[in-house]
Length: 200
Image (cartoon, rainbow, N blue to C red; front, top):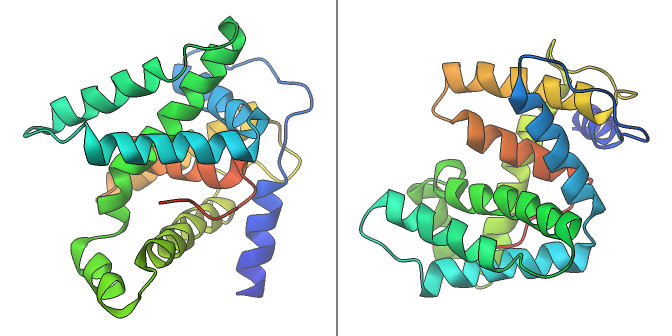
């Protein structure tokens, strides 16, 4: 556990002082680097507010019979929520919202019904416990990344780290029931927030 904690700390310590050029041929690397930068640059209070907004919208206004309508509703609400500020602020908000919406959609994958029912049946404050378990599962992904050949090292900039995340999540998506998008959003969130607990 101590080794895993040290590995995770090393991954979370990777930061881009000056962004490096995005490698040609893989736009997902540039996209992930932008997500890392956006989440890192957003104050904790704003991250919490956006998470709470997405949670409330999903529970109250985005119930839909099909997954495509559900996802479309969440993305539209997130876009409406990012209308303030200048163009740079709106783009940062949209990127943060992309990560939060994707993580919200992936919760049932990370926390299957049997796990959720067990936690909800044994804990009074089950939302906190669900968040802790989700956080633990994100941490496992990040520790696996850090011990994989794709991890570029603790001194890597955001582009190199994004390339590592892209390759690792592509490998994960090909070997287990976790999509590239769900893997990438979970890892980006954990690293860019320095491993702080998620909010449900």
